[in-house]
Length: 67
Image (cartoon, rainbow, N blue to C red; front, side, top):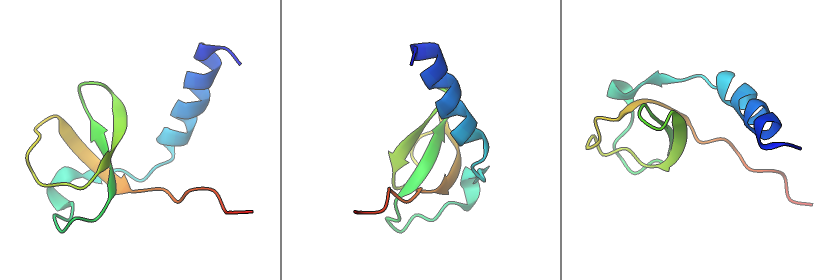
C-alpha cells in the first residue's frame, strides 16, 4: 500500500468519528482522542484546557479484540 493510499484509508476512518467542540470535554483525566487543528490529525491524551490548537474531542476508540 502506498503512503497516499494509507493516508486516504486513515482519513476515511477519522471522518466517521463524532467530533464534539473541545469546550465540552471532560477534564477529569479521561483519555480522549483530541483534534489538533494545526497538524490536522488526532492526538490521544486527556484534556486539561491548556492547548488552544486542540479544537475538538471524541471518545478514544477501542483497540482490536484480543485473540
